[in-house]
Amino acid sequence: MLQFEPLTLENAARVQPYYAQVGYRLCEYSVGVKLMWQDYLHPAFCEAAGCLIVRNEIEGRQQFDFPVPGPEGDVEAALLAIEDYCTQKGLPLVLSVVPEREAGRLVCRYPVVSVTNQRTWKDYLYRAEDLAEFAGRRYSGQRNHINKFRKVCPDAQFIPLTTENGELVERFWQDYEAEFHKESEIARKELAGAKAMFRLLDTDWFRAGGLLSEGRLVALSLGEVCGNTLQVHIEKALYSCTGAYPAMVQAFAQNCRQDVIWLNRQDDARDRGLRTSKLQYLPAELGAKPRFQVGTELDSLREIPVIETERLVLDGLRPEDREAYNALCLDDARNRWWGYDWRKDLVGEWTEDYFLQVAEADFAARMCVNFAVRLEGKCIGEVVLYHMDYRGGGELGCRIAPEYAGFGYGTEAFAAAADWALYRLGLHRVVAKCYRENESSYKMLSSCMRRNGEDETFFYFEKLV
Image (cartoon, rainbow, N blue to C red; front, side):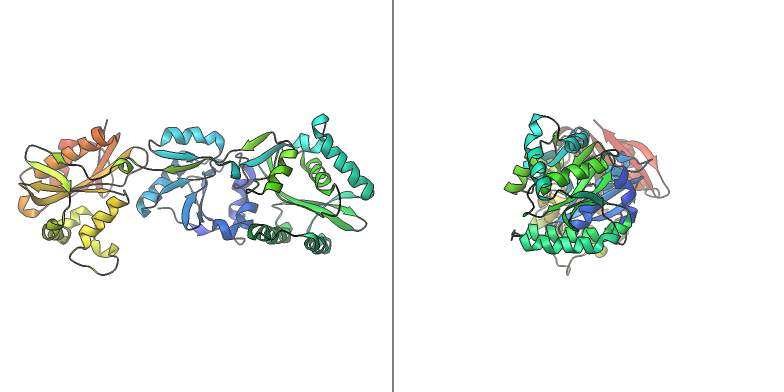
């Protein structure tokens, strides 16, 4: 299973090489955004299948960035790892800020999925040459503002900013805050993050520059080259210095245009002024960020269905099944083959209703379906459909009380549940496994499914539509 660790300044050097070559163009795929918005995103990362996998936790809800492949990265394997992680953890699978070029892949991958693509979070993407030249009638407004700036600050020149310019940068922040009147929490956090980023120029992850006039900075910018895109994390100018903003935008683009095709000036976060400003610079594209909330076929179930066979009925567990179900769940000798020790996952104290409540809660969350296997109305075992893989597959398990073993009830119940899952629920694949030593389960599964693998512990089986 994937093992995540918080993404911090101390370990950001491990993720930076992935972002340095990524071609997604979206601002979230950068070191700068992860560090600036660390308190909001709570990013954590791991490396798997040659890819960077980032898990964010926003307002208590976990969601994943699309995998970022390294030179030999396998995105398919990374997606499988994320899906397995969510299945094992019982988490909803959410892939957020998906690059537009990868959206089609996910639409085809997931049979049950909800996609949102809010205007609010779309990035403003500009061609580097457009912002460097401001050519043509459409940019006449920007040129006019820059001409006004040149009249006010005729000596202004662009200078690269490094750690050696610390005093200049600090003086700029003092001047800027004297004019800064935004009171929103997000604006205050963004300003604090901007200041912190300028303390990281010694990492060589970022490019920064400013407009120097009469010995002080009147504007500055900081960006990060990610593939063919400059992620412009910070743009600040003194409000009192007319035209400083477009002059800074142009100067920064001119300084970086040889290395990139695109400049991403990021989203507007519903700020009306920002949106107006970013649109005035005429973006070539708005970078879409589809969010994929992936479900499973179980989401369509309103209740546990009834399945009838020649001798048995499969349906939901009931309060009157408590004694028989507890005996089944507490039978350590037989549950050795079930591969599950209830004590390890016990939450709170065990009560007589514990196992029934767990089954009820798991179905309420649409994590699995526990079918009671009934013979003449009596619960003699269960069949469980679980480990839904988000791609139209699920795992099936079956256990029968010892006094009813050897009569073919397990095979009958298992086969009926598999057919229901494939032809009624709509799965395309059902899998199962048994311990190598478990001869009775091996015979049962062999009669219902096709064996498709083995390892030192299990034999594996599958049934496909």
